[in-house]
Length: 457
Ligand code: PFF
Image (cartoon, rainbow, N blue to C red):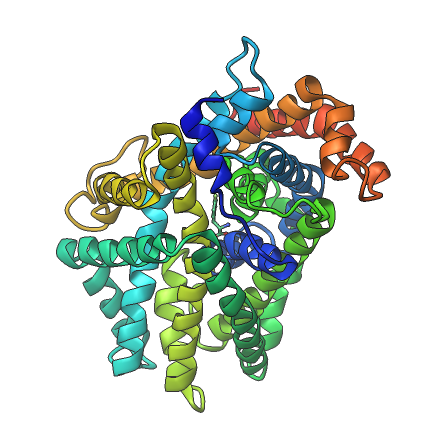
């Protein structure tokens, strides 16, 4: 390792407490995906049958890959590219996984930051009451006015990026960890309140039925690919995010336990979000599978008809912003730490460079509801293309290579040593089971689902 790398490593920050590790990792997993993707995808693709496939993907693929990523990161204590270069110094270019992770981070951030931009704008609109109307036509018009205005779209996206950059400037411990430790408990509290309020509505049974009744006829290869892609997106895996966070993990942290907790808590948030949204959707006669705009059109109309609706709506959008913040932090941390450690520039310079690059890279997705709405590739706008490519292609492909790296290159002994903190933690049996999945099951399953879902076999 070069001298500059050594210097960077000796000053390397990390998460300071066990709760901090959990909050930050959960903060990455929980995000817009729980509120804007999971409920509408589950509802539209067959309810409980989709949920089952999602759960299987999470357990057989998501969890092992997440554990592998965190373990590699903690072992190498470096960004994904340096980590793989250090752990695999031979001829095979495993470090390319880190490069593709950086590309995936930019791709996801380009559209994700735009949805977060709408959320931030909605916090203000909720406070001043301008979207509080029980008439869906009014809330629809409010959303269209925002999303179809190129100037507002870009400016709000920049506000979000600068806000996240500001937190990252405070560092890993005082920025990411400190913020997520405060935000995660708040998020759960509010979701419980909102779920409870929604369940009192007339359409509760119909809403829950939509979310939980299985519709096996809707299952197809592409639906299975969607469920698997969602599992990758939800758990923030396949692109080095968990490897980056793993590099901040304490050595005595039990990785499988943490990963399992994160998976369960993330699932709870998704289900609670579905329970908060669907009863309301049915009560007020909305179209249940209308995608991202569901959150921005349905929720305001719902709150307008509930007691204390104004306050609840402000809280909902603040909390959606909270969820998005944790995920954005982890997404941006990937390029930041790569630029910082690989180029040997200061963390603040790396943050500035990432911000500028993102403002350029994100403009395509930001303008795809206005100026660039007619610009389509394979029938998809830039926004939808970035979303589709990242979840369904880049993250699963990254997942295959991470599983192959650990399962076939790194080997069982090093994996067990790293996972058990050199034998300090007694998790060797769990480690063997995870290793088996990584070696034989996860890569084959991911490949099969991808090939079938993309109609290639
Ligand atoms: N897991 C986040 C969500 O569900 O919203 C999105 C995400 C964050 C994906 C970080 C990938 C990532 F690296």
